[in-house]
Image 1: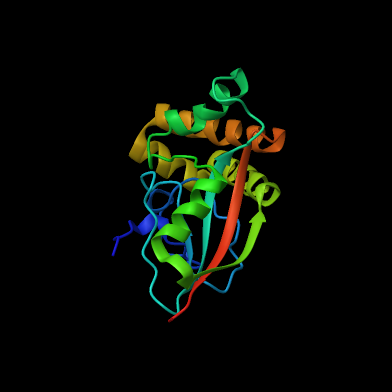
Image 2: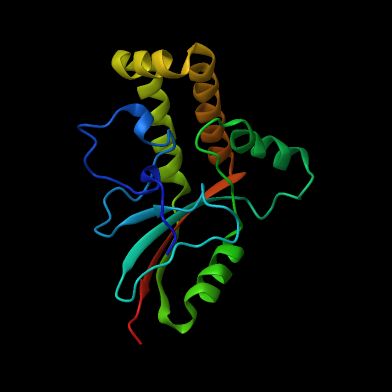
Length: 182
């Protein structure tokens, strides 16, 4: 069983957490009734082990399939992933995630829904940007712990990622899965 870092798990309660306890990138399926896992920070080819009877939502970021591999648009779209300090994120193609899920759990894995949640993700990124820049307590905590340069870099990367999602070069996907007992 793969042990997941704390910031990969979505928590509805953030009352006692600091901005540094979590990734600055938001989850879009915040209202889901099921546990939520983000695949962005896991190494490629790694899919979390899910127990039989488990029902969860997996979110991940992908480059638009319309972008050619070495195109200028693809290189620009990689900047938020290459420059981010923490946690390191890796976009992955939708097809490879579906193949990995199928290979890791075989016929016991049931995909209940697959949704492009890019619009919600872009709105959530804009909200994170406003929080990091506009809420004094959050801004001061980030600057105090990471320094002004890291805070500015995160501000830039969040704004850039939101623009790239709005442009359609980066996509966000949510896959709701269930593992059967048979």
